[in-house]
Image 1 (tube, rainbow, N blue to C red):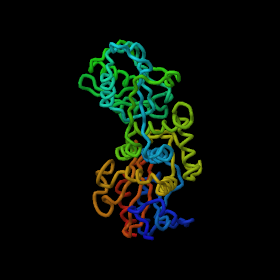
Image 2: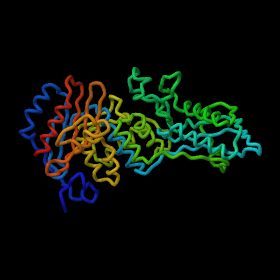
Image 3: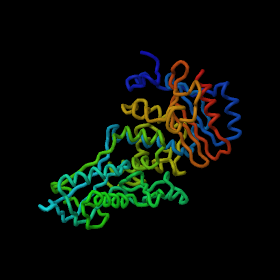
Image 4: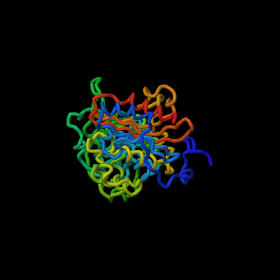
Amino acid sequence: MGRLTLKNLIPIFFLLFYVGFPEVSLSTTLKSLINEQVSRSPNLGMYVKNLTTGEVIASYNSNQLFIPASNQKIITTLGSLHFLGKDYRFKTIFFMAVKKNQTGIYNQDLYIDTKGDPTLKTDDLIKVVSYLRDRDVKVINGDIVLNDNYFEKPYYNPNWKKSWKGVAWAPYISSIAINDNLYSSKNNVYLTDNPLYLLGVKFKKELRRQQIRFNGTVRFAKIPISKKLTPFKIKYEIQSARLGDIVEIINKTSNNLYAEHLFKKLSANFSRVRGSWQDSQIIFADFLTRNVDLNTRDFNINDGSGLSSKNKISTKGMVKILEFATKQDYFYDFYESLPVAGLDGTLIKRFKTYPLYKNLKAKTGYIRGVSSLSGYFNGKDNDVYAFSFIVNNYNFSIRLFIDQVLSKIYYL
């Protein structure tokens, strides 16, 4: 069987993986480069491993815990693929529980059963209302009732900075998001702090735009089981793109909104309670200990996007997660979701030259005082390398340092 390369990373190949290899010292060619950077950025962690041979190529502070910033999304997307499956789709159901009368008048509430979809768009609402019109619904005298029982409050993570409220990359997380939680007013664009209400208002406007008279209000409630068990008289189901495609958006563009919806979705789906940050922390921690075989002292999980400074991971732990991913049947979807060096996503402006241009795929991370990069690349002999670099509380950019280290490792 041939050598392990990123072109043949399939689960059967990983039956060849090592039982255990000792960690080796830093390569002589890298020592001076690393020592110079460490003098500038002492809070640096790095770990580079040849997955083909099992050899640890470079390691510095690799067991120390660091804030990973958006490298946290590696954990979120892998855990979601693991538990939900790459072909999973979010569903949002619009339904009426009783018949309209012969003149097209509907005298009860219209329900919207939300299940955590972060990808809903205005075009979806247009299709729903067109569906109602095609079934001769002309007047709705009840309310628009939105399920507010799928995700727990608060909508805004209490461990995020209060000063971030109102900026698009620190979103409010309810059981639905439409148009990325953004709305326009008088030529300005705003971020809503109540995504459920925004959905209700937009749906009401679309009813009126398509000339269905709506005489009720928008309100939130737990939808009674009796209503869900009643045979629906009119029902329209919106399905999201497959999870593998949503994961690609998250990792290519570092989408915090989608990442947090996935994070809360797992506890809503599996713990039989409303989705919450606290319950999802337990699920993801269990994933890392039970499936990836990390020790609980090697990480701390707080959110799905990496905005919280309470997230912690070691670079050695991150590489172990990346190695675990290569052995899974959903690895292709995860690997293809990562930005390509010099080509797309958050790496479009980095690694623009040989040997890493289009040869490295990795997740970036950045919040104030934190920079991270973790992923894969092929060496000159097509050996597969997994790596993780994280620096906290730094005063100097480490981008050039990372580029130089990985380029040197390529030629080993």
